[in-house]
Amino acid sequence: MVSPNNHYTTKSEGVTINFITPEGDKKTIIANKGESIMDISHTHDDIELECACEGSLACSTCHVIVDPEYYKKLEEPTDEENDMLDLAFGLTETSRLGCQIVMEKDLDGITVTLPSATRNVQLKGSKLS
Amino acid sequence: YHMLKEHPSSLVDMYEALPMPFGLVRYGVAPDHPEVKNVQNRFDEVARDARFTFIGNVKFSKELKIADLKSHYDAIVLSYGASQDKRLNIKNEDDSIRNVFSARTFVGWYNGLPQHRDLQPDLTCSDSAIIIGHGNVALDVARILLTDIDELSKTDITEYALGYLRKSRIRNVTLIGRRGPLQVSFTAKELREMMHLPNTRFHTDTELVKTELSANAELISQNRPLKRLMQILESGTSKTVGEKSWSLKFLRSPVEFITRDSSDPSQPKFIKAVKFHINKLEGPPDNRIAVSTSVIEEIETSLVFKSVGYKSTPVEGLPFDEKKGLVPNVKGKVLDKNGNEFPGLYVSGWLKRGPQGVIATTMYDAFETAEIIMSDIQQNKPMLSDTIDNCPKMGAEAVIPILHERGIRTVSYDDWKKIEEKEFEVGRRKHKPREKYSRVEEVLGILDK
Image 1 (spheres, rainbow over the protein chains, first blue to last red):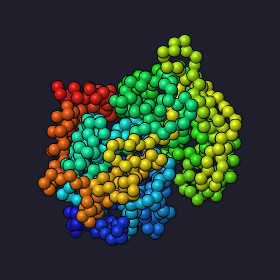
Image 2: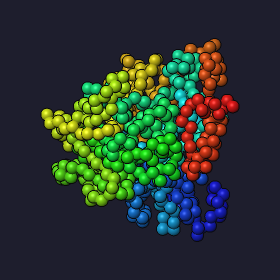
Image 3: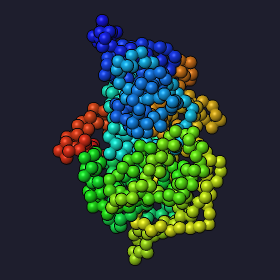
C-alpha cells in the first residue's frame, strides 16, 4: 500500500495519526513507526508545524495538544521539555512538544491538535537568552 | 517567511544595518546555547528564496529613511527591535564610570557585535561582580562569567572575549533585583542551568524565599511555570559546596554608583560600590510593587552590569509611544497619533509589543503582522502611495542604486555566505562552530579583495 507521500507503508508498519488544524480541519496521515510529529510535519506540506530549534528542546514552536486518551500512553516529559512547555502559548493539561512524540504501535489512532497561534495575551516578563 | 508562503506573488526586501544578518539570534543568544540558534537555518531558507533580497550594511534612519522607501514599496515593516537600555533613573547613571556596563553591551561584546568590540572590561581587579536585574540576560552574563573556560572555548564565543575570560578573576556573581523571589523574570531552563554549574555554590535569603513561598502558595499552585520555577529555586538552597558562587539578592533598588577617588581628573573614575535602598513589597499577590524603605545598603564591587530591560528608539516618519517605548499599532498595523491606521506601515517584534518574549513569541507575532498585511491587500486597503505614474513598485532594484550613489557599500546574501564560509573555516581550525568577524571594516575588506 502506497501512502499519499509515496512511502511504502504496509498496514502492519503504518501508524495512523490525526491532526486537527487551528482552523478545525481534520487531516489523517499514515506515518511510519519511529517518526516524530516534527518529522511528519516536515514530510507533509499540509501539516503546518513550525520547528524553529529543529527538535533540540530549545523552543516551543512545535507545541501540540494531545487527546487525553493517548496523552496517558506517552512517556512523562523530561524537565527540559517541561521547561519549554512552560513558555508555550495556550498550554493545556495534555500539551506536549511535537518533536518529542515518536509514533509507535501503541499510538495508532492518536489525535493531536495544532494550537492557534494568534493571540493578544502578552508573555509576561520572560526573554529567552 | 509567512508572507512568501501565503502570498506567493510577493517580493520581500530586508534592510539590515550590519553586513551580517540574524540580529539577536547571532548577537544576543548565548554562545553555550547553540540549539537556540538552529532557527538560523529557517532564516537561511527564506533568504535563499528568489523572491527575497537581503541588503546589508545599510543604517536605517541615518543612511536610509522611510521617506526614501515610500515610492518604491507598497508596504514597509519596521522590525528594528529595542536597542536602548531601560534607565535605572539613579543619580550618576550617565557618568562614564569604568567597569559599569549594560549587560546587553557585555553580551554584544562576547558575541562579536562590532559596536561593542572594544569594550575592554576589567575582569581581573577583583573576584566579585554585581548584576542589577533578575532576568534571563542577567543569568546569561552570570553564567558566562562562571562557566569553566574549557567549556566556553568550544563554543562560538569570540576569541578575544575568551582571552579576557581566561584571565578573569571573577568567582562570585551577585544578581540584585528590586522585588522578591516570585517576581523574577528569568525562566526555568536558565535557572536550572545556574543550579547545575559545576563547583559553584548558591546563596540567597532563604528566610525570605520560604516566607514568600508559603504566603503565596495558592497563587503559585495555580501558575505552572511559576510553580516549577520556585521548585528549582528551593532546590538550589542545598547547593552549598563549590569554589565559585552565585547569589540572588532581593528587595534592593540602586540609588547611586560610588566611585574610587582618582588622582587623575581627566580619566573616568572606577566603580567601588553601589548604594541600594531596601524595598518592601506591596499590592495584590499577582501585581506586587516595590516600595522603598529608608534603609540603605552599600555593596562593594569593582564590576557592575545593568540588566533591567530595553526600549526602542523612535525614528523620523514613524509614530512613537514614548511612554510604552514602542510604535502604536493594532496587530502590527501602525497607528498615527489620532489612532488612525497609517497606510502601508507595519511593525513586528519588540518594536511592536515591547522587548519581551522568546523566539516562539516573536515568531507568532511576525506571522500576525504578515496576516494583517495580507488581509489589508485582500481588502484593497490603501498602501504606501507616492507611485510614479501608477507603475508597480520596484523595491531594491530602485533603492540599491540610490544607496550606491550615497557611497554605501551594500552587502548581498551571497556576500554574507562568503563571509560565513570563512567564519566556519577559521572556527574549524580552533575547534569552534565558527569564529565571528567582529569588525565591519574587516568584513568589507574581505568582500572587496
